[in-house]
Image (cartoon, rainbow, N blue to C red; front, side, top):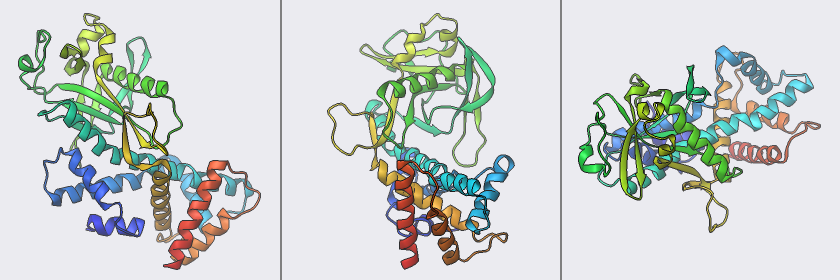
Amino acid sequence: MLSINEFAENVFGSSQYNHNFIDSALALFNYQIDMQHACEGAGRLLLETMITVGLNPSTEQARRDQNRRLLSNTLSDQLDVQSAVEYVLSQMIVKPMGQAAECFAITACRSYLNSVFPMWDIGIRRSIRCHKIVQDLAFSTSWHQGADMLFFANPLMDWAAHVNKQPPHRPPAEDDLVVAGVAEVKSYTKISRQSLHTQMTGHLLRTLGGVAVPALYGQAEHVYEPHQIWYLGRGDDGLSLFSADDLISKSVPLTALATVCKVSVGPQPARIHANPLFNLTVAFSQDELERIGSEIALYTLGSFADQPDIDLAWSEWTHNLKTILSTKGIPLSKRQHARRLKIMEILDREQSV
């Protein structure tokens, strides 16, 4: 098995991002693991980011085949070529770009949580799932992606010592979920503060219908029913604890959810703003995240060339992709033109190595 150093160097051609993935793995476990396990965790985070480039064969086999034909230079229909090029330039870069931002956001969120909840072991989970709200507080039966990150507290805390308001009539049980907050992570800056607030408020509301929390690395996920879910609020008068049942029955007003921690995380701004868009930032700008996404996408696309149905050498694959991306007459947006240039730069660099 490749180490994180070898893995990252294979993908990026250097070790420049190794420490970012390692720091994220350490932060995910609140720095309670040794370096060996942190490196293993970093490798998993990088793999999770790379997987977002791939396509689900059961639902997008046609797109996968189209991309293979694009790379093997057997895609002749102009509309198909245009569709495949636009997909490579956008979705296959945007997905790993966003996933990389989520990985790097773990470090910023951990630092924030340790300052807001000192001496508390607040857990972080990603890829949670919830039910959509059909109307009012009626929920669908199917699971859907929830908040980018969920923060949760140990349900067996000595709540009487920590909660300033009257402790709940029934304290949380060992198998309950105490939601300490949610995070929304963006890899781009073109979004309004109101949109971020609306998204995070919606994420919290959807947890009222139940939460599926994946355990870390290979363990079974845990599903929490509404009667098992609690919320930790923070106000001027201290901490408060209330349950999903209390909110659904309206014995506690829904406005209490406004006191639960909501954190927005995004790329570093191009210049310092007096009123920043995000609560927290990752260590990279939007352009740097896009370059990371481009390199991961190209590495994953390049791995297609090792499959028997294409079986192209790297140099031939690179030549074909450059030819396709240089095809005249394909309408591209301004952003896609910029991405095309970045991809061409990376391909030129790889050819010169």
